[in-house]
Each structure stands twice: as structure tokens, then as C-alpha cells.
Amino acid sequence: MTPQSISVRITRVQPGFDDIPLPAYATAQSAGVDLRAAVEQPVELHPGDIVAVPTNLAIELPPEYEAQVRPRSGLALKHGLILPNSPGTIDADYRGEIRVIMSNIGREPYTIKRGERIAQMVVAPVTQVHWDETASLNDTQRGAGGFGHSGTH
Image 1: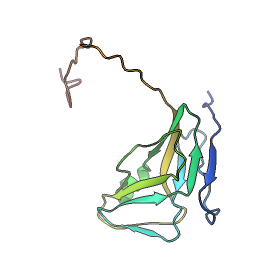
Image 2: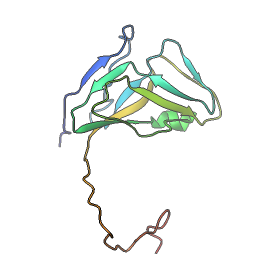
Image 3: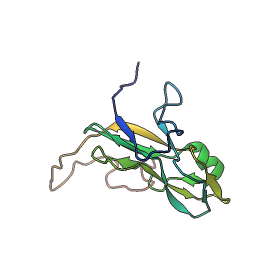
Image 4: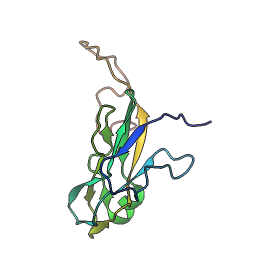
């Protein structure tokens, strides 16, 4: 089975970053494309820091799609780098630069280098909801059981 394919317009926000590749799938079955740091100079991220790392990219998604920005597992495991708003959502009507909000929850500083893969982006269809307000909801076995409740009875 071949994954669905759509066309998405992309532009570089500023000149001078042509050395940084456009987002690309690492393998034929990758769900996300790699986003890279478009920084002039290396950025040192100390434990506890939060920064918005530029990618120098803006995209034009079709109206029924979104893009989700997600962390790279290797950066999280090896260096404690996370995306605190993960997944970050890029709406179809946003035309600004994609910036990746990164935080260092590790024990050591980490230096983000120009062109480094810092996050992945997954483009996915969107379903919009029409809310049907009602006085009550149908009962289920779980009911209103909250955190840690499912599968315990």
C-alpha cells in the first residue's frame, strides 16, 4: 500500500540559508520530515532553557490539513531535548515562519548547530467538529473514571 500524497507549497523566509536542505523523508515509510535549524551561529541551550529555533521555512497547507511538529527521539533520549508544546500545530491558514520551541531538560548544555535536524513534521488531515449540545451523555462501562482508571476494574 502506498501512502497518500499531497502537494504543499514551501518557501524560504530569508535569503542566505540555501545550504540547509528542505524537509525530506528519511526513509520510504517515514511519517514525518526532518526540520532543520536555520541559525546563523550555534545556539547553546542550557538545562532549563526554552528557545524558539528558526527553520527559515513557511508552508501553504491545503485547507483540510495541519502540520504537527514533534520531537526527535534521539535528541530526547541522548540529550534531554524536548518540545514543550508537543505536538505543535501549524494550521492551514498560517503563513509565517515555522519555529521549533525547544527545551533542555537534560543535565548538560547542548549546542544546536546550523542545519542540524531538530524536529520532525507530520502533515495530517483535519476533522472539524460540529458540537451537538445535550443535557446528558450515553453511559459506558468506564463512565467518568479519570486518570489511571481504564483497565483497573
